[in-house]
Length: 135
Image (cartoon, rainbow, N blue to C red; front, side, top):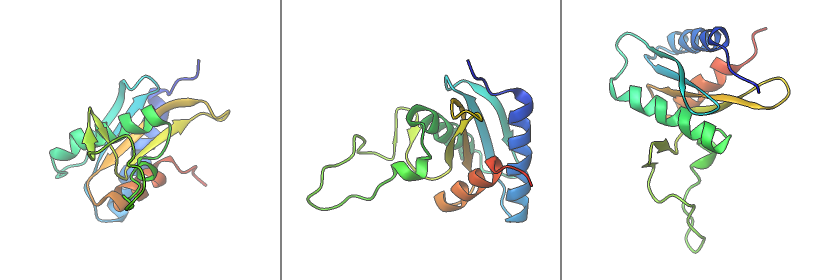
């Protein structure tokens, strides 16, 4: 069974913190395994305390749906069915940008990353930077 290693998680956290520093942000990063269990967590000095729970919820959501959380936040359209969720935050899930699933080289789910500290768009950008392959 594919697993995320602590070493891999630490590399993701380091890239995320570097991207946040470049953007002038103070963020929180949470990495969960494929069972939504915490593997690694990092709160930058001065980051909002509320971001702790938000980052965890975004990571959990990305694992549960195996999709970036920003893609799950579709706008409501008049006359169209409403998605399964009628609240942004429900049952430990958070449907706004900042969560991304983590996959191994073969495409198997190994976990999820959640980021909180800015707007949903800023958090999503930090998450993408954190998981981008170096080089």
